[in-house]
Length: 255
Length: 371
Image (cartoon, rainbow over all chains, first blue to last red; front, side, top):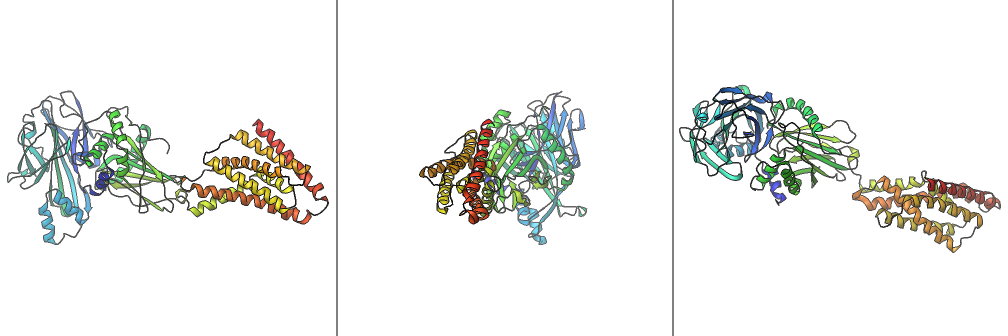
C-alpha cells in the first residue's frame, strides 16, 4: 500500500510545465487498421488525455508511403485523432499546436527552466535584471509519433516533417543505440537537453545534450515504449506580448 | 446528487463544458477530460465527484509512489486497482474549509464503458464528508491531474453551479458556502432542538398536553402535581435516550395506542378520586416510559446532527419539559389559581374536563389500533 504522504508530496511538487506527447491505440498497425491517436499532457510519461480542440490545432497529420494527410477526429473527444493505415510499413504522425500563453512566478519559472536544461535563459534573465520578475511566455507543442507494422522502422522515420522544433531519428529506433537530431527551424540545434523516458518504469530516465550537429545518442536499455522530449526557448515575437517563446518537441515510439 | 454519473449525464457535462472550452482557450494548460463537481448539501455534508480516465489515474498514483506502471488493464482490473488506492486517493485531494484541511471518505464508482468503442471509459471518484461548523468558504486542489479542468460548485437549493477553470494542480479560488449548508454552532443546535422539543408539546402535541392536564387535574396540591410530573419526566427521559441510542425499541403501532390509553387512564382515575395513591406515581412512571418512546420516534423523524448528537438530545428533552411546565402554568393561571378552592371546581370542572379527556383518549386508542 502506498502511504498517503507520497501523494501529498505530489500535490506540492508537481512541475509547473508539463510534457506533451502522442499515444496511439497500437504502435504496430497494419494496412487497413484504424488507429486512434491520443494527445497526452503530463509528466514522467504519465499523462491526462487531451480531447481534440480545433482551436488549438495548427496541424495534425500522418505521413506514410502513401503521402501526407490530415488526421480527423471528433471535436472535444478523446482520442483526438483517428486514422486508417493505408499501407504496411512505417508512418510518422505529427501534431503542432497553436501557441498558448502563461505567466509563472519567478521561482516557478526558473525552476522549470532548470528542469528543461534552459540555464542560458536563466543567465539572460539575470543579465537583464529580470530574475525576480515573473516569466511571461507563449508555448506550443511539436509532438511526433512513430508507427510501424514491422519491428524494423526502415527509412520512414528519418525525414523531417518541418515542425518548428523537431526530434528526428537518424538511426533505426529499433536498434540499441538511437541517435536523434534536434532541428530548430530545420537547422541542427546544439546544446539542447534531450530526455528519454521509458513508459513502464518511471525511474528509467536518460538525459543528454545535443552536440554541435544537434545530435544526441541514447543506449536504450529496455524494449518497450519510449518518449523523447526537448524544450527550445527563444525570445518571443514582440506582437505576442510575452517575453519568451517555448517549443516542446516530443517523439514517441515502441522499440 | 445521489447516483454516480452515468453515460448520459457525462455527455451532458461534456456538452456544457464544450461551451466553456471557448472561454478556456487562454488556459495555460491543455484542457483534459477530467471534470470535478462539488455539492454542498443542506444536511451539512459535501460530495465531490471527480470524473476521470481510470487508466491514467492508476498510472499517476503508481508514478507518485515510484511503483512499476501497470500496462493497459481491463475494466475489472482497473476497478480492483482503484479500490486498493482508495486511501491514497483520499490523500491526493486537498479539501479545505476556510484554511482547515479535511480528510474525506472515498468511494470508487463502477467504471463506465460507453457503447461506442471509440469512446474512452471513465470512472467517478466520490469524496464525501461533513462540512465543519463555522466554515465559510471551500477550496479544492488535486495533485493527480496535469491538465486544466472545469470545477463546478453548487450549494443545494441555490440554483445553477458556479464554474471555475483549474490549471492542473492549482488551488481553486474560495467558494462561499450558503448559510443553509453550514452546520449550526453548538449553541444554535441547542436552541433549535430546545424549540423543537417545546413545540412538540405546545402546540403540536395535543395528546401529551391532555396527558399533562390529566396529571394536573387529579389534585390541587402543588407538591402532588410536581411528584407526578417529576416521575413522568424521569421516565420519558430514560426511554427517549435509550430508544434514540437503539438500546430499547417498541414499534409505534404499540407505543401510540398505549399513549392514547394512558391519557384515558389518568383522566378516568381523576373522575374516581382526588387523592394521590402510591400506585398513581408508579403508573405515571410507566406511562412516562411509553411517552419517551413516542418522543424518540418524533426526534428520529426530525433527525439528530451526528456531530452534536448529545447536545441536541438533551436540548430536545429540556424543550419537552418546558412545554409541559407551560401547560401546567397555563392551566394554573387560567383557572386553578382562581377557582380551585371553590366548591364547584371538582364537580363542574375537574370531572367534566377529565371525562372529555378520557373520551378523547379512548377514541384515539381505537383510531390508533385501527390505523
